[in-house]
Image 1 (cartoon, one colour):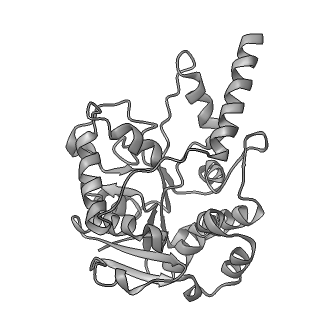
Image 2 (tube, helix red, strand yellow):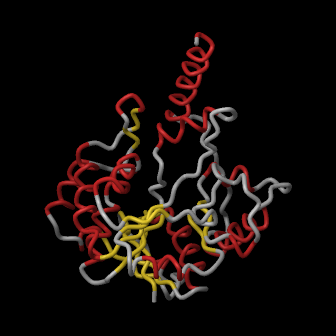
Image 3 (cartoon, helix red, strand yellow):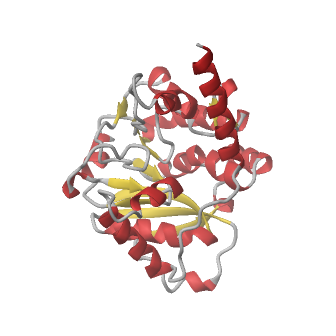
Length: 287
């Protein structure tokens, strides 16, 4: 059985359970690191292929240092390499995915790829034409080449995971001018610093609102990353992946009947991006 893991709070467990449902269809098991307390209401609806455990069960100086330094989103992001290191003590290979991911087809080839490769990464596949969509071209350099919502590892990836964890302890911050983007931008260096790193170029992996230019057949979609941006695009009836959106929403509602899509009206990052875009337009005009 392929081993997957994710990190969640109780308020987002319904997403983790939907993820688990999609994995169960192809023989996947999901380990969920739960941040915070769990109430009894979730025990009766927990999928059989889910194992929950708490942060207190991870005993390491690295975990303690991370807990002392970060809270909320920064804590969850910086715990990814620590969670993978913890699970590799028991399992030969593990795949981390964000809990807003959903699988639509067999992932066996990803598990098999970890037999010969120590690390698996998925590119963002942002549009990259220097003639069109130049803002997306530059997003590759601002946000990172690889999406931190997916990373597969085997036991030989320990050194790389420790390095990634040290980077997260150094700084979790969105700062374009410093070349930082939370836990994600550090992944750009992994294929340079470490061996046996495979870049998964299958466009059906980590399909999302930022890379939906290709019209993939249903059998070509491995998993979709349903973050807020993806949800806002795929919910449109005319969108090519609207049927996958409907299936995902239906599964979410199985675990949270009251689920509705909420978009943040005010987001500091959106404001930063708007300022960056204006600076970019002025710079292009001057040039």
